Amino acid sequence: MGRHSRSIALAGAVCLALAGAAAARAEMRILAPPDGAILGRTPVTLIGTGADAAIEVTVTGPSSVSTFSGKISGKAFTAEVQLSPGENTVLVKSGEQSQRITYTYVPKDLPAGAYRFHPPVEEGDCKSCHPQGVGRTYPVSEAKLCNSCHDPKTGAKRLHGPLGTGTCSVCHDPHGSSNPKFLVMNVRALCVQCHAQTRSQTHIQKSGDKKCPECHDPHGSDKQYLLR
Figure (cartoon, helix red, strand yellow):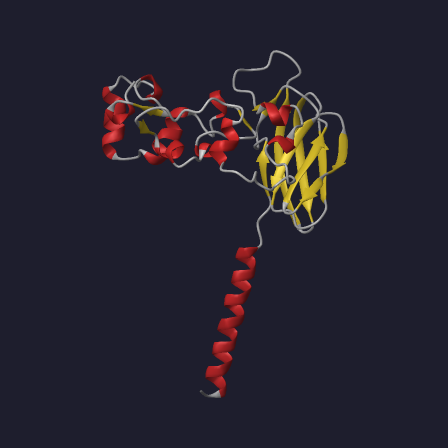
């Protein structure tokens, strides 16, 4: 191999290594509450992942600016932040990474679409799900963890796919949600994430635009098509 060919090969290897390193580094993300959430309590537990340095949170409210520090466990982090009534801009920094989100704090007359924390998070009991520390999963399957508080939904002959594989978080957010039942999104949008075939939309239209759980049990059923 000539010098020119070796240089090209070396440059290619360096590029691949850099690309791999960039892919390996987790990008900082806010897991809860999501951007744009409407909240009825303060302080708020902010939960995120992908930290590569100390966490600093700056909250700019309608009439004040406050700075808070976070706690890190591996790449995961939490921070207790105080909000002011109205819209608050929240800037989260970790080393060279930053993310800007907004939360609206409504002290009373909370609207129906407000964000609600899952009870363990609401009570600050992270260890009930993360006994080895924030960001570390419980040393049992996800389904067994959920069933330590919730009644198992596995008694039917036919189980919905996510439940059958024991992955409740495909449909339910373990930290909180602005949707009923702590769903990760509204029920129609959630169902068509997997059931996106053309016939699914036709079926929805023929049903009179009913919500899917009106006819189908989202956990399991003894009947075909998970019919109730």
